[in-house]
Length: 203
Length: 203
Image 1 (cartoon, rainbow over the protein chains, first blue to last red):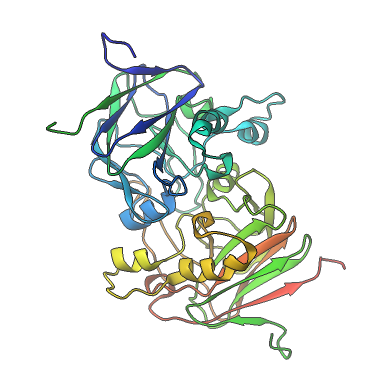
Image 2 (cartoon, rainbow over the protein chains, first blue to last red):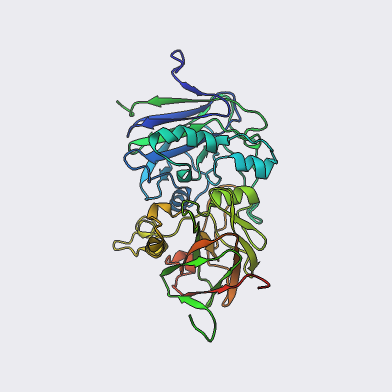
């Protein structure tokens, strides 16, 4: 925690996990611009309940989510609500980058563990196993789709320095959060991510 | 099994589970047209490994999959390969319809258990829990996207009577398969699904 700025810093290509109480607000900040942060959420009282892109996109009838949109669990409960968003373009289709991503897509012979490995390590103390890591809500990730062919491209994030997105917890959660490790997702460089936890609105 | 036609029938709004050996081919047939079938696959030796839309779409760089495309697991192993497809439009974004789907989207007060409930019941004898049900590969489901707004629509399947898709198992699997229970996905009526298991090609 940097007291002067009241935010926490996630170093480039790393990840953290922490608890978020019902009503608390989590703000994810892109301090330098064009940097993705993968977000996961688990029910703190039963970590078999986790963020579900499939449920969320089905109920929203939309793949691009922003202010006002709820993020549902695999049990169809609202886990988080987006309450502020200065960017408006995030991805909820793709799994966290991993050793396999770097091997299969980039051809790396000694691949980084990626957001997947960073999340697995950070979530392990909460008893969450790697197989419980689903599609993440990828803050600031810019994945346009060609409507005719279905081709997806990973383009530079639309976020500029200081842009941010804020989520309100609808139940007591364990959060996993990264500064994404994939070159393509972050326009070719690895930058930090900042985050801040605020008390319930009006508290 | 109907011997005369050598296929198995899944009754409308129901589901089944069965094993598929490495090399065997599973053909899913839409006998009347405009009927969706939700498909899941688990590693039979370790059911923590399951079909992953997020991994598959990332590696394919495409949301619409067809002949030649591999379907990956959450551990980035290929579980199934699509080896034939007479339709070319399937969905891999949305979770199986469920009681909650019917409550939230359709406003049903006494909702059907949906594909989710059907899959959970069929997979239970294999030790697979409801929380292990991810986004399914939704054969014949037609979900176009507006590239600008990200709005998704569930439209009538493009499949006509007798259309089919064939998958080859790349490892020993447990398969879950349904005749989908959601009105909107099936152009307003509930029809059966047929399936057939064939030995490895050339065997």
